[in-house]
Length: 405
Ligand SMILES: Cc1ncc(COP(=O)(O)O)c(C=O)c1O
Image 1 (tube, rainbow, N blue to C red):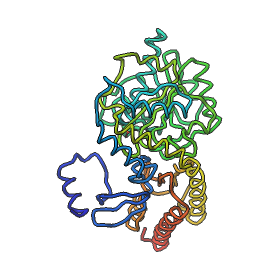
Image 2: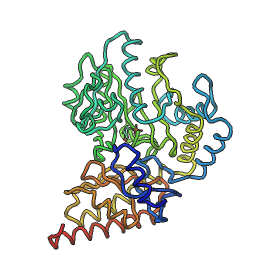
Image 3: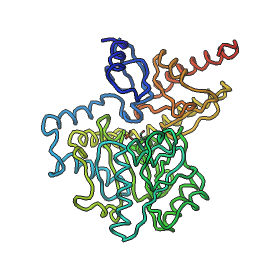
Image 4: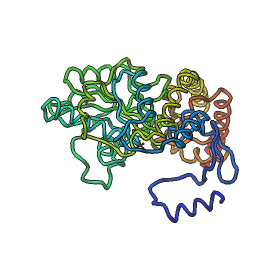
């Protein structure tokens, strides 16, 4: 089956909720993927920040396959070794004490919202329920996660959204201070907004957010579903800010490609989830957890977090060089291997042209090209990707000169 055949079947049988590129991917290895016609691409989308060890990392594959042969699923009525092993790895490498596992990012955030409300309503005997989030944030597609998301386009047509979510401008401490009241239970934010266009929180802002939460006795929750798991050059992006949140949510890269989400919380807050209060049939599935443990071990044993910092700086400099060259590049920003290039125009043609030359990138919000390569990339990979991007940008700038573009 070629690309077009698979695309046509998809167009016939699948709902039309995704805008897809016109290729069907069939195989991946390291930083590369292949389509159904054997074309090879360098993958700087990385499954939207999921494939942080590249495609089909041998250790992740082996852990998952071994587990598949032993026990695929048994429910949370029982303990399993992979689930407790992954929880131990996350707790021992973080500021948190306990973990709740689920299956996706949206579910992790749902669990965090429920945890925050229940912490106040059950443990503290207060009716606090409001959760403050940021404009341009993205927290997922379930109703509550959509309500938390500070982007109108994610809300459209889904009324009534669950109440209790308040949005404020990102990096605006006064707005946050004004929004907190005696019904607020938590603030949730992404240290680096991903879908919103790679916008990093300022250091002094994060410190102030922490202060406001502390002074008001409310919870600080960070959504690291996209920016976590080593991508920014630290295991958790919040570590760049010298803050200590009460809760962090994870998903995406945690499972090395298998579906998993997690909520990590400090002991006192975690107590809000007593027996029967929350759960998930597949949450903490042994196969996903076995893959997750392989991912966390690889991050440390192979020095991948340091590599993300080094390769991130290298890629950043190269993208800055392109900015000097092309007037339509407005800004290069981000941290580690979570980088964005803001353009003065829609970036979808650049995405198409890069793909035709063998490089996969995507656009986060229409004008920001987003780069999320695996954390084990080399200088040679970066050089090749930037070379392709440069060729594409050059062709676009020439069209402009000719008055075609
Ligand atoms: C920061 C952030 N939070 C939550 C989500 C939702 O994750 P999922 O698609 O796994 O539900 C995403 C997905 O892009 C995300 O980037």
